[in-house]
Length: 166
Image 1: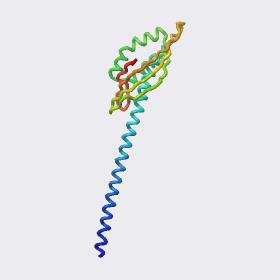
Image 2: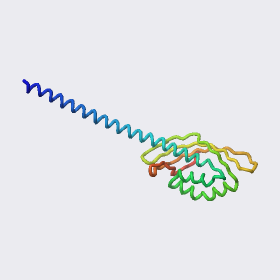
Image 3: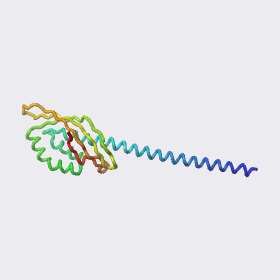
Image 4: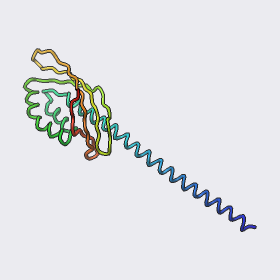
């Protein structure tokens, strides 16, 4: 009789052990999914911050700080976009200093279009007021909209292509 009583107890222990293993596995799966989603959310935020910073850098230019301004543009870009900015830097610096240009930009919005692995696409909207110190000319307002492609390079999101859109 004691042998018969021990058999159901073993079955109960085996069933409870299997249920515990299933619960632990489910908990581990849920935790892994949460970590992955948190990583995706972090990347979404980082892409939007990088696109916004790059847009602000593009519209904020001052003849008195042009070297630092151009450095910020280069620091937030990579690939073809960076090569384009490097090629245009001397001309832009010369024109900015000669004409005493002061551009004050304001980022209005950013939006995520797509994010896959280390590639992303974002939209950025910025407005700028441009004036020329000592010229007597009235300030001008301009409105910029970009479609930006971004690459994650060394853990940092950088703009690899910025195209103005109408």
